[in-house]
Amino acid sequence: MKELTVGILQLPTLGMNATRLEYYLKNAKERGARLILFGEYVLNHFFKEMEGMPRSMVREQTRQHLKLLKKFAKQHEMVFVAPIIRIRKKQYYKTIVKVAPNSIHYYDQQILIPYPHWNEQDFFANPIAPLHDPMTFTIDGFKVAVMAGYELHFDPFWEAVRRKKVDLVLLPTASTFGSHNRWRELIKSRAFIYGAYVLRANRLGEYVDGETQWRFYGDSMLVNPEGEVEMMLEDKESMLIEPINRKAVKEHRRGWQFDRALRARERLTLKEEKH
Image (cartoon, rainbow, N blue to C red; front, side, top):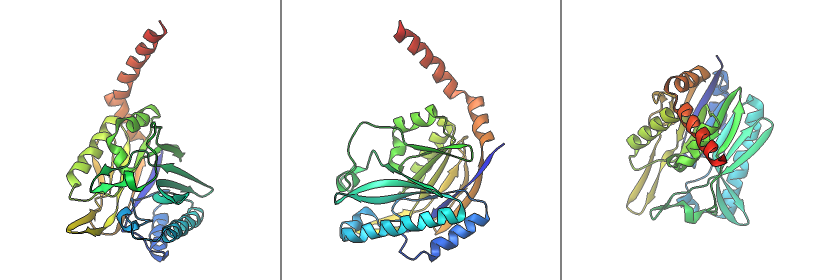
């Protein structure tokens, strides 16, 4: 049965120096990794920090990191998925980039956090529009979907996972405020219900806003289709490299038959609509 070796780089915001990134990716290559996921606000600063940064600095940060990812994708024959900030018409867009050896694709986050203390919706220019499916692609026979961390909470994205028979969901996050347990349980539940692996990469680092300290705690993990955590990183800079296999996905779906139950009723609904 086919296997795919996937990885997470659990890091704080990276500087322009490529040495640290090069070290990790060389090691990942030696361990057979084909797909590497970064957390949110790793290639760029946290959005609250960007409020005081020149737009030109943010643009250069994005340009340099995209250049590095393109170089390493070709050099190591890997695929990288990473949140990144793009600037269009002097406005910031919260985006996820997929960099392959011979291609590059972007996915603009569709639902952004709107809360008073954490208002990405107002900071970024991503439009409020009808939802479309998350980014999906195939690598070594595995169907992969990509959604932003906040989008985990919304069923339409997961319905696309079910409909497209996705094997692996990539979930980059920037979780803080001691929300470890809530995120773990949400991810485990989604993995089990939709019968897919979930690879969650959470960033590290701190941001102080007045008297409030934002501590990004890591806790990056790989969860299997049974809703079990196969591997988890703690709260230090580190890398996770693990294989996943199609057998686990197929056995889960065959055993629990969630999708089969829904499809049988969807067919009945279509017949009724025709009559």
